[in-house]
Image 1 (cartoon, helix red, strand yellow):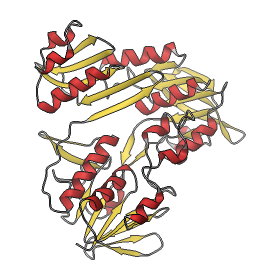
Image 2 (cartoon, rainbow, N blue to C red):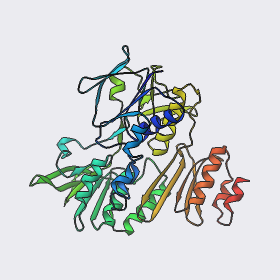
Image 3 (cartoon, rainbow, N blue to C red):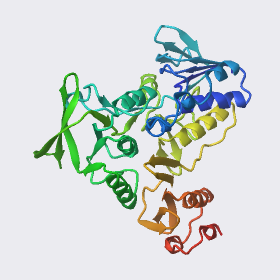
Image 4 (cartoon, rainbow, N blue to C red):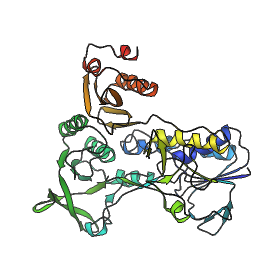
Length: 407
């Protein structure tokens, strides 16, 4: 194998090229990214970086010199427009063709935006995904101003926590019945809701956005509807808006090239797409996992899946079988999640050093959500990785030593 091209210079792309070199691949290796910065961490963007606790240079996964030292051709500010599968090359925006023997798509995802008719393109209406997004939002976070957050998922809640910490008034809209409705149990939603309300965030659930208003070339107000009823609409002044209503996997190049798409770029257990010369990993890729097909949006998956794909590109033949885990920092709370709780029929609440919620289907443990309780998280993670389930009653009993759950 002489030429490997990796499209997408985020966490997955950076992990994949580094693993290829670490595993001994010495052929030509090109990493192509649309952003002007070298690969960087995304999670701190909506946390420490916005709060001013993390300098820009500390975001970068490796110094730019690393790529030259490892003979990795890092192409920044570069966009791929076409994949020619028959000729096995990719075409860049300037017309240059990069040949490949193997191609990896680590094209990530893009945040969903509000429709233009709703005011989605008014200056001051922001998303939170890239370094440029974080820099734009940092400019908008002014003490005494009013931030509107549309969407009660993790990104929206993290942005609300940062803005409130910096002294802004914050209103958060959630169209569903509760915040975190698609990603956490009701008990965790209640905990996070109280955390934000105690900090002064105004949370409106079962509430939607009718439209935004512009004044002097910038967003200045919002019309909010309750239960989608215009008769109950309320208008509020706003200085900035953060839209956190989900992401869309980056499948455009793969789709145009005729690759199989199923909730992302469909790959097999080794990371190979429907074209045996093309691989994929990270937010953009869906893969088989324990009898179903899933797509994970997390740094952990981006790194682990990319490294697994790199090894398999070199012939390892090892299926990727992760135990998903996630985290979120909001105010003084660290929320740690391991496993996937879909299909649960019981949530066991444990009050220990912190608080944790344990999802069960029957007597089978599916997932653990821990709030300022790293010990519960670690024990839950080890149990899930070992395929073991503790007795629900023992979990609920605060006198139970968590170590005994592993016995």
